[in-house]
Image (cartoon, rainbow over all chains, first blue to last red; front, top):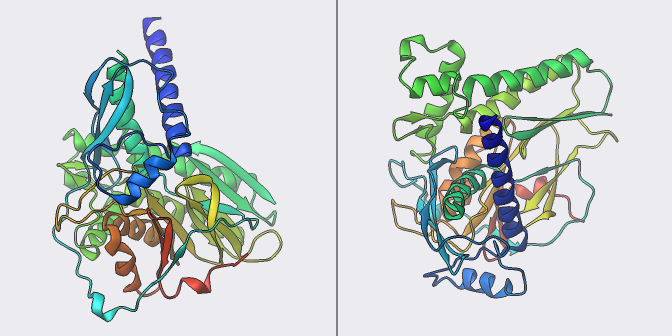
Length: 152
Length: 247
């Protein structure tokens, strides 16, 4: 009985966290942005001001919460969530796949200049779609764990 | 056209077969195989051989031939990518980065007994064979990493595979610990290769390389790639155009 309740509770919490994360993905409004000096992330942040803040419907306890280290296929991803005034204000990546022997040898001078263009939406009918699933899953897991602690 | 989707290994597995040559038994064989792979190699299942290895319950001498085959692919991938791809992390085994592509390849061999025309997808990684329902090469969209409801490229594939590696992490600063360069300039990288094992493992390693990844693939024969950057541009290898369909 208690086990069932615990499982049900876990499923609900996981779903809520997942929904929140999906919202953040859809709106591109990753809340964060702490010590950013990167122009791209600044512009990404400024374009997201019209969207609803992530986690606005959930009140968390203020503090910093470190999620579990989650596997991203080729290493671990671990995040720390910071909550201020009950809102998720910062997500910091603590751990990222690091087990690399040495730098990959690429002779850039021998390579042609690669073609670069602005991304453009394509509306052609397709049979299937290729997209990333790996690291984002580990990110979601670690963030979910951190937020579960914040909500506790 | 037969189309079936099941949720296995925590991701949708999609089969499409335009002709009706594949029997129900054949389809079941494919899905059962993915279930077997999940049970055997998932690090999230306590009874899997991977979990047992990580608990020290299975020694190297007891590894099955199949596991040795998977680990051999992993080892050569680590070598080919100068350590950017490794199934061992902090003493723990997680072969997921190889197993997904390997499982799709094995599933292709099962469907290949029935027909030359099929599509197999596991969580965004796709192997196609032959042609689609209207007799054309399979048309595959590449998802916009900034908007999951939009495609930013469409490619036509026949007897080849496509895999994408990326992350939902944005606005973060992730550094390559080796040369201290920013990794987060690349939002996703998509690789086309004849076989999904290769497309998958090379996409994973190339993504971990950050901005160097697309150049790494440019140097590989038989591989093409397109990298979506955080500045909302796309960089393509020189041979990419042979696959692209322009609207």
